[in-house]
Image (cartoon, rainbow, N blue to C red; front, top):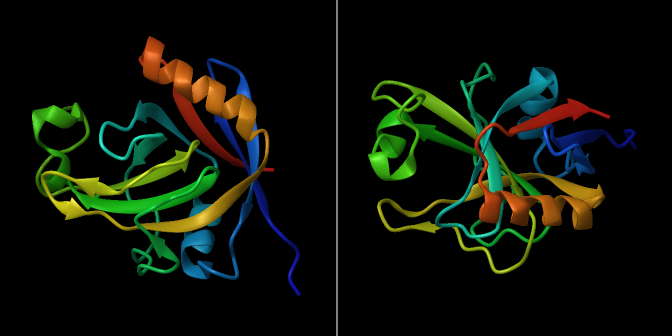
Length: 165
């Protein structure tokens, strides 16, 4: 059996970190794509529709987008999810991505779900299944508190980072 791989997920300005185990057995192609691209860091956003989710958007980093392996529309606390969006899906001003989402582009969304009762249903496009590629194994309570702070105080100036642990 292969050794488990772990990553660190951080809100850099707040100095909060958690550790996640990659789900290589359930999402091997996605895990390989993310692992090979690390480290990754970008502006953090707090979800409007999915509920208890923070995420960052990145240009595509895999040679081929992973297939929908280990999918969910109901992520649980500690799930790390991978989404791929065409720029036209995110280009409406309601999302606030005017600097990064443009027609003809693709964006990868790496997300952390920090609390229960999430539903990946978007009023503009319908169901948005994500690939569950990691699970937080330590530090989720502290991260959840920081995520709630993002929701209440704002995310401007904060970055979400993914690095090998």
